[in-house]
Length: 152
Image: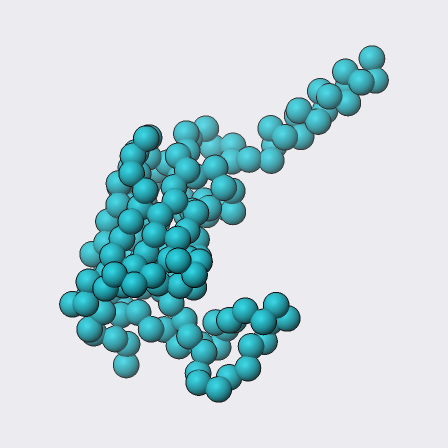
């Protein structure tokens, strides 16, 4: 009897650990490049075009520009199918600044934005991606003309 109760309560605990909004999610992975080169350490945000699509998601690109999207609450189950605005931000520290984190990896805190304002703002970004079940990975290459107008 005790074993059944323990299994039951463990099951109930797992039910409470994920998103409980009833929306079906699709895992999203992809790659961000700028003029064909991997964009490393960039924050990628997917912002839904419609309010009934959940909250969107975000990720940080790795050394190859690859990412796996987490929903806005940090769950890795994906995001709701639909069309999204894609905003991309990349902060870099000033030259000669020391890393402040203990891992030795680049820490962008106190850094400056290297992407144009139109790409960092979901409201202004021309980048779009449609998430669909069984759909393609989100592969986005930022062309040179979008990168020319840097922040001042």
